[in-house]
Each structure stands twice: as structure tokens, then as C-alpha cells.
Image 1 (cartoon, rainbow, N blue to C red):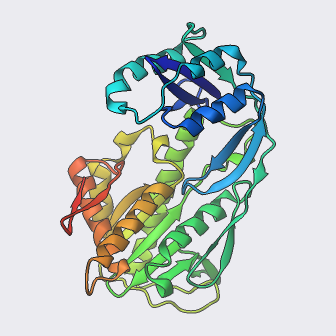
Image 2: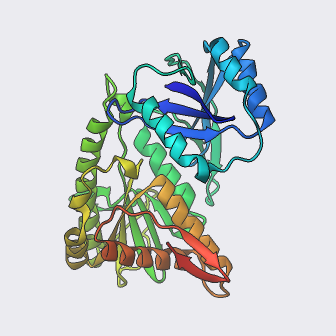
Length: 358
């Protein structure tokens, strides 16, 4: 990672470059506005350690570390001349973009910019958060847990189980030969419909060395293809009337007559590089073959859909959160068909008590 500081007139732009991709690293930036921000930068200049906090896809703080940074006197001079107060980010965007372009592409910088290489570290202090499900089960959110698949499935359950507490099932099973096999990772079912979730992760902890973002994107494509095939098969089994039981062996009452939603859950939608493969032809083919809707989500998008369902249900008198979740997925599927791609993000805005989407 790198930190950059630059003058924009009498204001200070600061940016963090995360080199998770050698060709296209991510850059986060802002304009200094508050006196406490200024005081924090002065503390770093004077030798205090820099605190770094790591957040997961749900903006939960999962780890932290600290290390010294070599700021030097040049940054002290820039800070001293910096004004504080509300900044007009729109007005400064063009000038800021020019600075960020230089930060992205140049190896040397002029007198108005300070760039600091942050030390590489593998020493992180984990923060163990717990989430409680409606079934009173407790799970630790642990970014260093090597079972990445299990962690993501538990996040999916935690996000959805409050919609319909008795209708969310982890790893339900169907008969196969003399035994059973897993139908899907997470199954939601209520009187008006059912939803299957196939969760696919990057399995980063099993890689040495760590793969490039390009490699991760290639792997995600393979995971999505496999998940769609699994969802297609799972929906067919439900439509065929195949009995389904919980891990505890209890036969589950599953709604099978209404169109079923199939959700492919991945860590990050931005990793999808071959978006042309997830267009209208695939959507229509899935609808025709499986008699259901296909969705491509990451954890953050699933959270937004759950929040939208809760907002819709809260403004109704007979609409339950699960009904609103089902309805919202149908409306989202319509938008996918209209956009000609599964690679979309949808936001719900409530205006004058009427739901409008953008």
C-alpha cells in the first residue's frame, strides 16, 4: 500500500493506493476537512505509529495492526498550509483526478505531492465479532479462518434468516443412491416461493503464492459456471418432487410450484471480467430450462437486497420481509433482463412512501 498527500490550492488531498492488482490498483481518496484529521497527520509526522484497520464485505472491523511511517518534513509543511472546513468535492474532482492519475502512473512526484510506502506486514491482530442467528446459533466472523466457504455461507444465513426464521436451511440434503448429497448451500422457503443459494469463494488461504487479481477473476468465472449448473440441477430436483431433509434428518416442507430463485453468491462482483457471458441468452436459457430466475450477487449486494426487503415490509401492513425479499428479487430479475446482464447492482430509494429503484 501507499499513502499520497497533495496540495489542491489551500486544501489537502490524501489517497490510499491498495496494490491488489499490479495493472489496476485501487485508489481511495478524500479531502481533509476536520481539525482532528489534521492533528492525526501531525502526530504521524512526529513519529506516532499508523493504525491500520481491516474491514470485511459487511464493513465489520475484523483485524488491525500498526507500524511507523516515514513522513518527513515535506508533509509537515503541506499540513501547516492546509485549510479545514467543508470541502466541495464536486468542484475539486477534476483537479483531484489529475493528481490521482499521476499517483497511479508515475514513479516520481513533484514538490506538491508526498508519497509514502507503507510497510508490508503479515502481523494482524484479529478482532473476533460474533453474529447470532434467529435459531440462537452463534458464529465467529474470523477473516483468518481457512474455511472461507463456511464463513461466506454463515454470512449468507446471518443476512437472510431474520426474513423468515423457520424457513432458512443450511446445507439441506436430498437422496443419492444409498445415502444423501447436499442440494444447495443455503435454502430459503416459505408459502409463496423458494430460493437456492450457491456460495463460491476464492480459497485464498490455500494459494501460495497469492494469486493476482487477474487470476482470481479467471477462477471466479469457473466458479460461477459451476454454481449455475448446480442451481439448475437443484431447482429441477425440487420441481421433480425430490424429498429434502435438514442436516438433522428432518423432512422439510418446501414450496415447489412457484418460480424458484437461484442465487450465485461470490465475494466481489468487481472480479467478474467476462460480463458478456452473463447476458440475456443465459438468463432466458436458465428461465426456460429450470423454470426459475438466476441472480449473481456478492455479499454487499445481498445485504442491500435484504435491507430493501425490510424497508418495503416496514411500509406495508400485510407484506412480510420474506414476501418483500421474493418480490424484490423478481423486480431485480426484470431489471437484469432489461439491462441484458446479470452483472448489475440495484439500490432502493423510498420517495414519498413509494418505492423507486435506480
